[in-house]
Image (cartoon, rainbow, N blue to C red; front, side, top):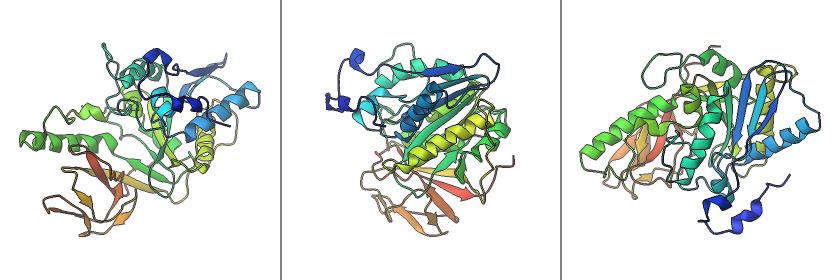
Length: 340
């Protein structure tokens, strides 16, 4: 199946808002009771494996090949139409940061948020489909342990940890918002020290809130699946199977319950480093989940300061294109949760 509206990439970057592809959410509702499940794709416009998978599922439901047993299923194949049209990560800004409704939208993604956030709040669970720039296999991110803390209070850990193990991948990552908040605290100190202008960097921990974090804030559960590298067409099948597995596990469709992943690799994010200067450099062209031995050089600051691993760890989300004042890479340790 070809991606709809691909020809729109011929339009200039800036076009009137009314000429952008309209927001679209397709809902299938059973007359019988059940959970409300949401599946989103193309939150980042160049991550389209989930878009293909969702359109495939829509056709199967419309042909009667897949039937809902209860509840409702909402499918959003293109969450960020402008970024999708431009075939890049963002339209005006990253939609998966500071996702919240705003009274006076200024950037394109503010309009997306005003449409998307009420939809998220209507549902019991979310599967958000993404792809990544570098790495070797699909992985999924899940949320915090149950807690009543101020950052991300949560009570659905058992559901998330049960479903995430059955999406079809075997690598699982947790600790996103907590680690992001620690990085923001460190960044705020850099602003106080005069390294960055507060107008040019984000120092609000809530800037780490994206689709899954917003969903959890409304009482639901939420999982992110990174289906593969951006241009790997195998990611479309990974995305499709993850949707099917989720719908079976939540009772929306019939089918044999998928088994949990064998030999899962569970990783907890624990640290994040900002880039200070455009001449900050990595010791090598890292890929997500490359292993780093204790004491090994990870990167060198422009002033010659070395960043070395304080313990055996893995690097996650290394971004060689990161701008000064933004997150540069994360570190994760092995082990931890997934007890359900």
